[in-house]
Image (tube, rainbow, N blue to C red):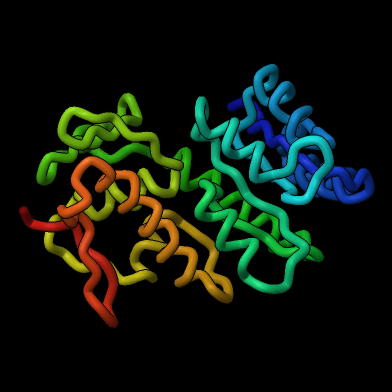
Length: 229
């Protein structure tokens, strides 16, 4: 029997943390908690979570600062918790490296669907092709690395899977729905914007050394494709 996945819940609202911990524990997960970003860094170093559920607005160290620090050494998937109704905070979170977000208040069923989808995305069975090469980009699934020319770049799990999908068939156009299915995301209002943001982040990272070169092309009204170059 495989060991239970560990989920780190980070929020300064003790009642919400207790509620989320109950939902996750009942679904078979091991749960560790922290009340702010600074405490979460210590807990994450000690317990090595498989996924982090992270509030944005917290004392001492907020969610954005936590992600900036944590992402320097780990690509563990992160689901953001946001109390905002507008999309600005969600957009900023995705641009900062989050893999998904969920708005407060939320239903237990939605929370569990997001958690399971992100875990499937980051831990799904590897395909036969372990190393992909297209243009001057090399993606290695065994080491979970991406190299552009002679430069290695760090990607979130979602960005990594999106790049792998696009590189698997250069020139093929993938719709946003195709890409969402590939990363096994949950369809929700605004999901197309989330895919667009992941692609924007991915482009910024892989094109940093060659700003005049376009690796991922937009096919307007359809979706995205990796260049045939």
